[in-house]
Image 1 (cartoon, rainbow, N blue to C red):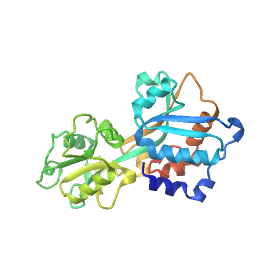
Image 2: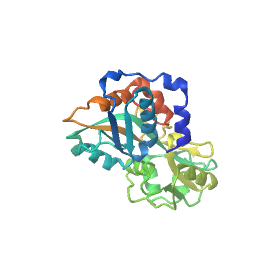
Image 3: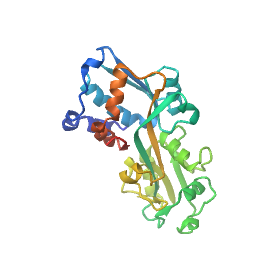
Image 4: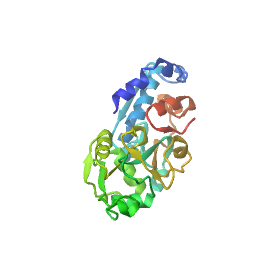
Length: 272
């Protein structure tokens, strides 16, 4: 988790004081809320969980970063109150589960500022990362080989990027790095490199290309016109409505009054 960013958000008294104070009479003092799933949601669920406990004395809040699939299975099997998924539910999963979008994560494709390529189509991005296109000249750039930079296996950002682009298990990475910061730094130092990162991590050291002519902004991510994005879902059972502290947290997280917490975590809130 980006702890410095999380602490900066949570230490703001003005932000915390604006949190909705739901009635403390709807849960017992020993109630708890358990969440499990997407590691990509660590920052946003951490911000929401800390803010929730700050305004709801007596409730404990836990988060287990096991991955989207594991979180979906955990809530389906009754092993946690709320599952966390950074992908849409499958048709089969939707038979028994609800997936409420709490936020959307925009993923940007970044190039070196000296690279003349300013736009790529989603199809070109797929061709580049699968090795079908291996020279910048094929997409409007100079005659230089493309150096593919990505995240390590298990990274939520990698999972999101490969899921949206349809490149799972097909990418021909030159380097697989363990942090977004390393991706940014590597692309900034190599004029032929290309990488990807969450919009919240975008740095002036690199340039984010438009995708199909659309820039990644809060508005274009929210309206769906920027296609390189993924949802952050709170997953709950259809046949067992949430009760007690879990329901209070769900109402809290989905409330428009909490949008600033979600924004503070670097993603686009759905409730606003």
